Length: 106
View (cartoon, helix red, strand yellow):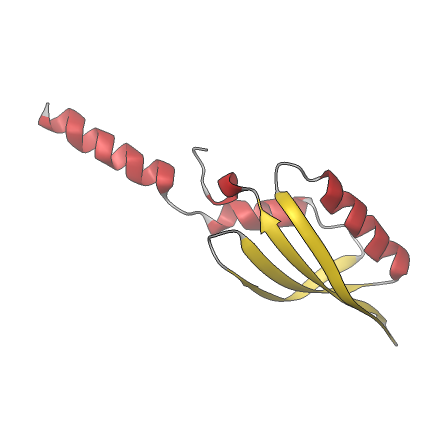
C-alpha cells in the first residue's frame, strides 16, 4: 500500500507539472512563416504577451486568422500597437491560453 501511495503521488506530480515546452511547441505550430517574435513575457496562469514582427500587413492578417482557429491553444487574444516600419510591421499580442496548455496529462 505504501508503494501504491508513493506511485500515486509521483503520478500526480507529473500530471500537474508545468511544461513550458508544450507552450512553445504550440506557439511554433500556430505561427505563420512571415511572423517572428522578439519579446515575450508570461505566466503559468495563461496570460502571455508577445512582441511580434511580420514581413507585411497581410502576414499580420494571416497570423490573426490562425490564432482564431487555434482552439486547442488560445482561449482569446488581442492584437495591438500595429506599426509599419521600414522593414515590415511590428505588433503586440496578448494571449489568454487554454488551461491545459502547460500540462502534459491534461
